[in-house]
Length: 259
Length: 320
Image 1 (cartoon, rainbow over the protein chains, first blue to last red):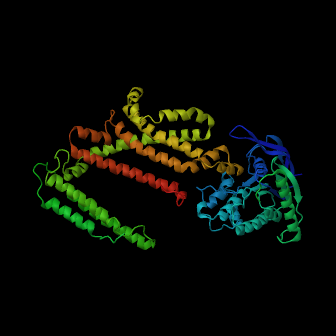
Image 2: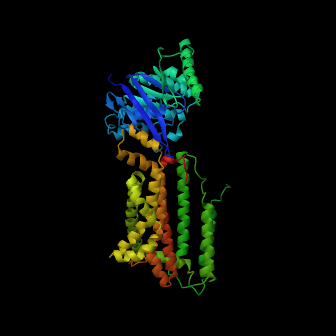
Image 3: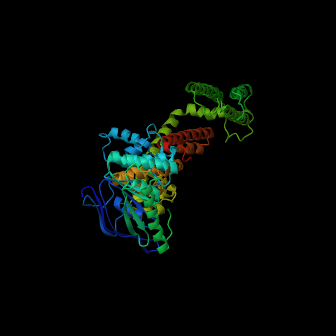
């Protein structure tokens, strides 16, 4: 399928400082359709962040291949935007220059100057262009880092627990904002999260993962229409189903998890 | 702080001027052509009051909250003038301090006026030498630091060289440099260069290795090339550390400059002080020291201004 992402037997081993091999991801097959919102959920050590880093091209798989549009992923590039839990804004640049960074390094800034203002408005940071990151709150910094990733019009936006460090209120706000941006910009979003509620609220498809071995346990399609009601019966049913899968996995294999 | 009396400098200066004119000089001291010390006092007092009034008016106009109350430095200026007044009494008025080593203030300040042509020539020579050495050492140190910070190969080959050769005091190179360089001025510039090169290289490379890896990761997902990663991420992120190295290097270069001017220099402010000492002309030695202090103070001030501009983003994060 055009614009799709495909994990084909992807395996990743890490070498620790002591020289031991740690299996971070064991044999993952996954297809993600263009324009869908996929959440990767699971306890620590289940390989969800590893999957995202592999897809971003920051690490290379030990075995298997990742394809985007039938093209092999070999290195990071601007077609896959990445947002971490920590906003990672460049502290020496103000908000405007942070957001314009991608355009500037790709020498597109002259032609697309107006985009910067547009994306600043999109994430609601108008009036803060000249502020430096340390002057803004965590939520505002995360919005700026979102705009910085979005301005290059990536085909896919990879989100590694982007809302993990935010308070509950800002978090719910940002969830709605993500949905709005996804609708407006029509892109694929892949998000790693610990929060089952968040996954059910946002995703079209929830990939539930378990550790040791780190693999996909189950893929759940969410067929609720947007906007979703957190008190809807189906919503609650899905949530307990995922919790059950995670709980079951935890008890069987005696693995600590954090939800 | 308590309210400071704005008239203190005026009172202190007036007292010093009165002492300078009214009290008879000791016959042991050489006569000066003009009462330069009194002139200087009048000039300092006038400059201080004009400056204070201008800045007070500017604060009022901009309606900003002033950093300090008006005449904040009045007590300080009055104190400094008082110190010179006492020094004047101890030297030329009473000859209580050894006459040879503590000449009259009139003659010290007089030297700055009467010997100005030679002093200016020396300043020009010193600054030229300093610029040559500092720029050379800075550029080489900066790029070496970048190479070591980014490239494993450079780290393997260059880092040990920096660690072994760097700590050698720059002046210890003199015997070798005199053989290697045919021109004394090149040897002098090299000594200054070495003293700047070492701290700049070390702190640039350590600054770059301490940059958060996620900055590089984020930049590569935004389409940055390796060149961008070095010059748009690594260097600006390491700038605070680079500046620390530059600062250390510049301070070291002052020491190196003074030493460098002792090897075969024809002019230079360090040479001037050294030469006058050998002539036992201590009034000229003090004049030279005053010039050195003012020059280096200006250089450091400029460096701080540049730092404030370049590292403005650090405001509220770190202070040093």
